[in-house]
Image 1 (tube, chains in turn orange, cyan):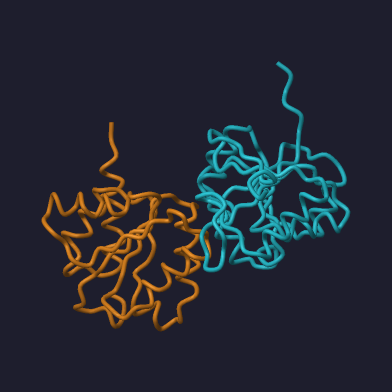
Image 2: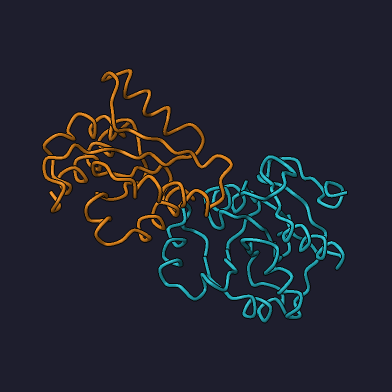
Length: 138
Length: 160
């Protein structure tokens, strides 16, 4: 766990195209019951600057540490999340944000929700990446 | 089938290089080179790294200032090239720097405070509208089209 994150529950911020983030949040609630601490931001109707502003606002509000999920690597949601993260003070970034994960899917979000209590930041990043990939098969 | 001529395609999009551009436009028009023309981004390694994470990595992405692009546009591109700008002002600067611009596409200029709605993806501040009218006045054909599959609308008619 990063210093200052010990014992605090983790939150997720989903930054996506269209209604994907909100739909993932609702799908997770269908499977696991209502879940606090999951917030979705859509890029619908937003330019890069405004999207960055909204993500930065979520990241800077005082609260429990956040893991940022975005859908498309290199898309506007990813660019905005990276810009917002870079705009935080070092102290806020260390205290508030675990990192950014791209290619969000339901398996990784379910893993996040079920394992967020008691996982360190590094463990959580490894876990969601692993489960997200293992959910893709043929 | 003869290959399509290599062209400079100019586009304004306030999300700059993103999913719609990389996947939608590049696939549809067989674009193999992307240029992000923005003086600030051309001066920032951090910003360039952000845009290098393109969803489709087959295109060559470069970062040029307006002055550098004006120089390159003195001759036809080696590959069909899409140039993306954050707004109309750098396109005016490009004309002033001696480049020939005959056509321009508007993708998204999204809602911001003080901007007037023209289309659901096109909101113009007074300054942007004045810049676009100046471009129209210089004979640049400006059409609005977010995706290759969406209808193309003539900006001159929309502004009246």
